[in-house]
Image 1 (cartoon, one colour):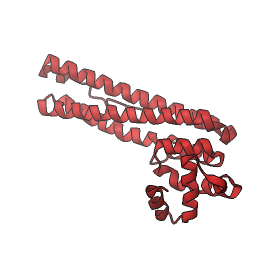
Image 2 (cartoon, rainbow, N blue to C red):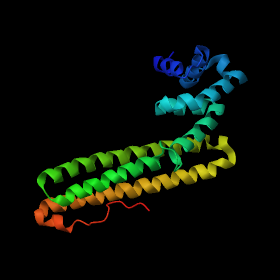
Image 3 (cartoon, rainbow, N blue to C red):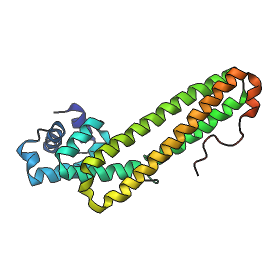
Image 4 (cartoon, rainbow, N blue to C red):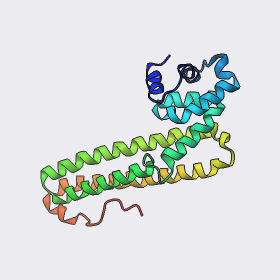
Length: 206
């Protein structure tokens, strides 16, 4: 039903019949196989392998229509994106963005037109990246509100981790805005403002 889903399934050696079940659940028309206990269990087992490849509307649709999958999706989001140890996590992403922010500050402190222009371009990208991460957290919060009950008592640490990620994103975004405002003031005041750039990192998230 879905060429992308079929290609992903081949990559993970998933039987074609299972692909049809999952595709049906994604479209909201899973049929008798998807509604059977065997079909639901199969979809739940496939979710950790295939859900990371889905677009957000597909994730939301299959989570709301398949309770077995909902549990797996919530835990997958938590493990992949909300923990501090996963390389795919928001925390790891922010660490990398934070290093780029400090590099942009260092370039800005040189005060030359080329360095300032490069720093301004980098700050725009960082602000957009922060917006995307914040939007992802909004999507997670919306999903947890509807299907969080499927993980029972485990929902509390999941929501706590989500709130911590939101706080870090907000802190990072504020640091980017402050540096952009400084760049604007530096441009208006002339080259001598460059000597006033702080020597410490623009975003020390300790």
